[in-house]
Image (cartoon, rainbow, N blue to C red; front, side, top):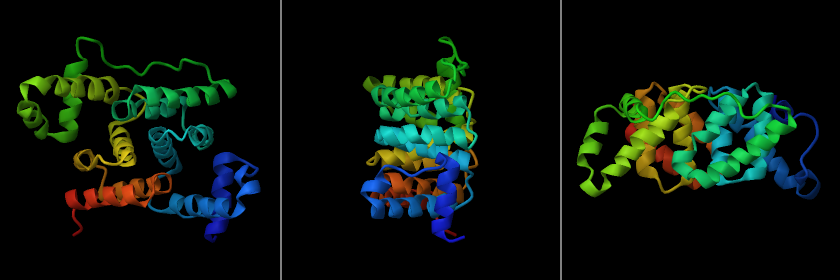
Length: 251
């Protein structure tokens, strides 16, 4: 199949029959979009459609492109993702984009779930309590980043140590410990989230190393970042690839 045929097949798989409203008003633009995203990018690399849709969801949530997010919640269900997996991917955005934007995304997810008679709330994936969220979070943090975690904590100025505590208990304790998505998936999604943010190259580099440490290899990272490209543009994509090459040089 050529890329036009591939895009038509993939679009039908994700969204069903029919065309978008943009085909009526901007057919040339919509063809460029569809053929590139669904005829080329979706076929680059070896990520399956479930992972690609999880990446799409978190990037759209980060961008706050909510109409497209809503459409891709349906697409995510169509390729076999569960309600739990979709919710957990969106929840994973909170430490990086903040609560208000994450709540906006959650509202879109909930609207789709309600339209498809998916009962809310879905089952809890929580695995920590107040007494252990810090310790469990720190344990996950060390699993991802290794000895550098202790060095960063020790090196924090006294008046900023609370930020390191929040990082361990909130980001890694409240979110990374949850069920529904495994650690490798959460770390890959995090890389895509901070790539989409732009201006966070220091954190991108840290999470490239984190992904490497949890066995997401360079080809997976390149494919994931490539999948972000249509939604974030070339500048942020190229910046992220520069970070990948710096941390994991070509042989």
